[in-house]
Image (tube, rainbow, N blue to C red; front, top):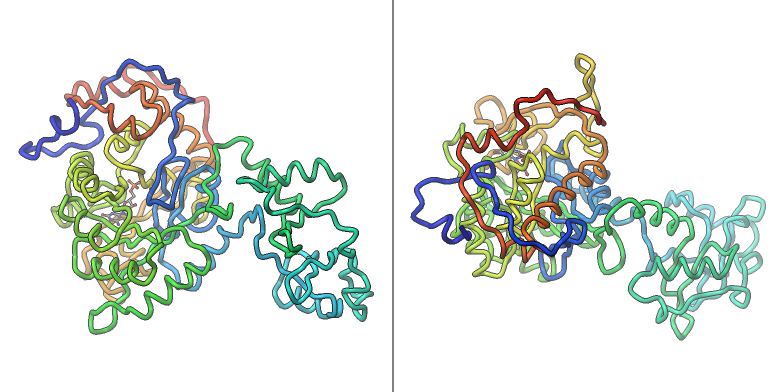
Length: 508
Ligand code: XMP
């Protein structure tokens, strides 16, 4: 049945991923042709609809870089001081510049000794600088091999390569992909390892280094297209919690200062992450951030009702996280007795989201690629915690227990995580996060699962298979084509390998 017939409002029973299966349809689409691109707002596009969870055992900069390189998005968690979170975001945005739009420049009148002091003070890892005049026009290139102590009393003008000897590229000829343009440039000018980009008035507009291009090319060879912003930087998001004053009111100054710093680092999305977002506190926070940053992509959640989606959409959220209690480390349903099995929650949310023109993100409970396919018949993207927590890019040490390798994975509502900062997500104060507060998550271990590339390769391969079975060339077609059938317990048993002894040939 189509979604509206399968999940009628009057249906007394809520369903989750394993309760249903999708019907196959006539298909002209091979899995590898299926396009998995999605959008979280009009300005934020991902190549794959997968987001790594804003949890302190899942997403810091290393995970976010790996996610963006694979075409997805990482949400940096908030169990760290705001200034550290800003640094984590900066690490992702600066991972590979591609076209460095504001290269660090020097003027021709300064001493090499001064340049050396700046390198030391700012801890630059490079020592080649374009030289510009007071109008920003290119005057030369100061190459790293003359930025040495022995030349410290010389002026930049005395040792730089002058403008007349430099080969440059016009910004108007770059096209949409500066890396492709740089590839052509370095092929045409063997021996040159910096492409200086200028405008028609010879003002410096950017810089591409050959080592960055080589790094980008080798990193993208094996993968899908990375998710990049308009300046060709990797995309990244960061989680925010409703910071409050002792009076209980939102600490507007702290929140806006923090978001301001994230925006300065060119953050692509903030995620206002709480366990229960259909509350005036979260609504006020969404509105506060929306009013101050009209163009910023805001993700907010979590909710599991149509009214909750409408509430957050009205206040300015672009994408809304759906899920209360489906997560592998969640105990909300057991502790609080609330929450709706995830597929029904997604159905309800998707109808309100369509009416309001916002996106929804399926958050929690994804254990295999088939769950992602089912989620994407109703949602625009999924958030994965458990599936990524065992990757080497997740924070935390690998530990060995009885010959097997594990990493820590804990709920943000576990006592340990709440003490580390996430108490506000569950409506508690960090200092109260003792045994007196009901934890809504557990601390656990995940078996080490290799790299994000490997894990996402398998997951996205599965998603594309699902799209192939449904004849869906893209995610809009997948939503449109989906037909659901209820699966009996015997059918669920039949769906997994059975009556054989499984032999594993691939581990890590
Ligand atoms: P998975 O199933 O991918 O779920 O491991 C990750 C999602 O679970 C949510 N989350 C929690 N929910 N108590 C909860 O009820 C918790 O302690 C907790 N920690 C994380 C969160 O939405 C995450 O993305």
